[in-house]
Amino acid sequence: MNAPTRPPTNSELLARSEVIQALGEAWTDSLVDDPINRHEEGGWIYLDLSTGAIVARRAPAGTRSRLSLANPPQLLNHVLVGTFHTHPNPASEGWDTGPSTQDERAAHYTGVPWLIRAEDGDYSTGPDGRRGELTGGPGYPH
Image (cartoon, rainbow, N blue to C red; front, side):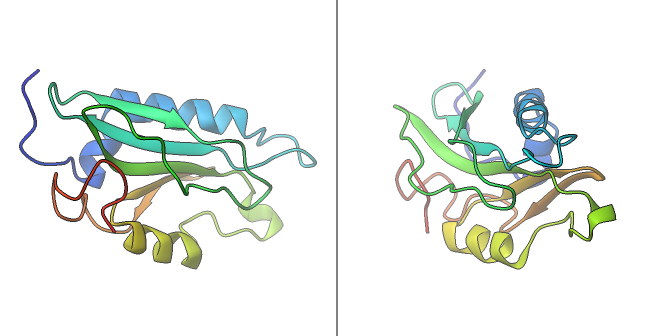
């Protein structure tokens, strides 16, 4: 792989096998079929500035409807290009499966796409790609 010249867009992230795998593992770990113990799972998506490889890192497990994606770990020679998390609560119980207002605000504040897996598919919110392209430090570009 060659060094990247720009960050991936949200649709490019959702097409990457590494991201699909991270979303799938988070979905499984969310215990979606357990009405008592279901909870949000997720983490951060990074771009290797030397090779263009995509790497996912998990955040600590969340609660039924909340997950902290603050304080992403910094990886040497990588830049944060997105986050991912699950919405494990079903629409049949009155839950909204798409991005919440809080997800939308946080995604625009952090400056990277937020990807969400729910029972009816994958969603994205926030900017189409990392704000400021590959500048602004390794974490959130704010």
